Length: 174
Image (cartoon, rainbow, N blue to C red; front, side, top):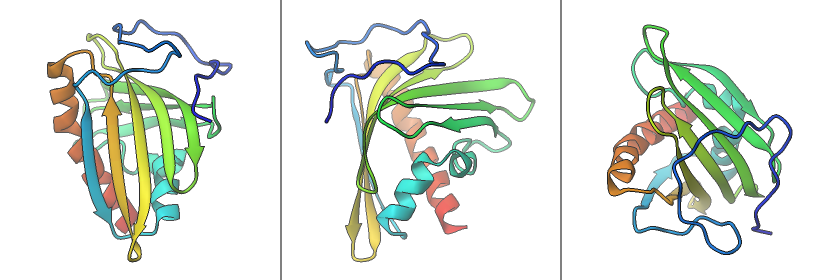
């Protein structure tokens, strides 16, 4: 069931730029949303696993040359959380992303809220919906990232998501 969940133990509230929310606490689409698709040369169960697995994420969540995932944790259950921290080539923090899983339908659909925190900048909270559909022995991955407060923030993520998906695809091929 797709509904708001309580925060699990260990979840730390962080200042987040206000987003528009509906009556039930769900983020509304603001018009500043991203929709991307990729046809990936693996089956949906492999694609889904790599997306949610903490160890798998280490191989693709730092797409910039020289950046490294220094922390990757996942509690894969509705209401469970994930956390990924990345440092740059000099060892300085680049960003931390935390999220709460709202819906998990392996290996076909995943819905989660994410908070992206970059040092010195305002954190951004969005809602991500990822689907994994089989297409002739491959997976059509569809990503919808919704709820960006501004067009500029959406545009920044829109430039970054393709790099993540490229790294994700490479990690599945290795």
